[in-house]
Length: 341
Length: 128
Image (cartoon, rainbow over the protein chains, first blue to last red):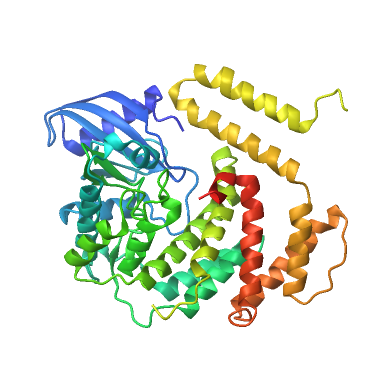
């Protein structure tokens, strides 16, 4: 779908004019931002006259791509999460308007503020000049995550969010595996190990579920925004810690445990201090195993979209070939016999 | 000695032509696609070069884990035999039958299987 077609652009201007109560709207620029097989992000520069938001603006238009993934929220739910997260000062971009009328662009979309900075995981972990003080960035990420985890259910504005703790994850992932055409013994092993070592008790908090390098913006070396809230849920906060530590998300710096950015302590110390929550070594291993299993299943589902013919795509096909690396890491992490988490 | 370029040679020269001749002249928004094409080609080339050896070895290990007799198979039957044994192994793992005494043998098999696949899909991952 080309959002940039002349008639689509005109309908978008009409929508924006009505949404902001403006006298006139002119879209100066509209181009696709890179990244994301599951959603499309478009940079939208517009000038507004009158209404609630007069002046020049830099926004993002976010809409579905064809490759929806089970457990990722639709645009409408994500919009409401952003409203909540922005109000809670969690570095979420400010969401402005949600459009559920398919007549405008053919799909649901929303408009949000465009934050400055670079999100690219490869660049942020490879180009030293982008992050001159890595411990500082790690601390900002940790403290922001601790604030996020301070939010506990129930939350009336988030009534639609599911709760998923360790045993729920295991059950979901087994169900997803059962839906795939082939068997995956290494992932079954990871899940069985997680089942045997599952924490006896868990707390449930608001969790992001994709809080990792590649999904936050770095601007002038500092944390400037957190993106991709479409997987948010209530669950074990340690799941988010395991995700940002997972080797599969360290991009060009596999040797730096915290997001490919910093040493473990540079993240864990501020996180534990700010959240008053302990992250034991065993818990860190457990939730990194869970992270690799989850990403492997998403990768298999994305490959299946290509193989089934639903969406033939080189990117989706290649995503299927990363599973072996995830399985290799799951075996490495679970080789040691552990005491309970 | 063969004097007609075969699959591996064709893939190699096609890939280097893409990277050396096309990539420098592509607009920015097509760079990622070109790099993905180059990656897909090198994976296909490695897969072709690797042949059936790892698959046969994997089947032998699977048979041992499941206490099956390992019978030599033609390549055509290899895929379905492995798929069948993988399904049985997956079921047994989920049921907890590899929790204790067969754990080490299972892990060795899973590690070797993943490593064999990584040698084809991303050999750099084996270096770290």
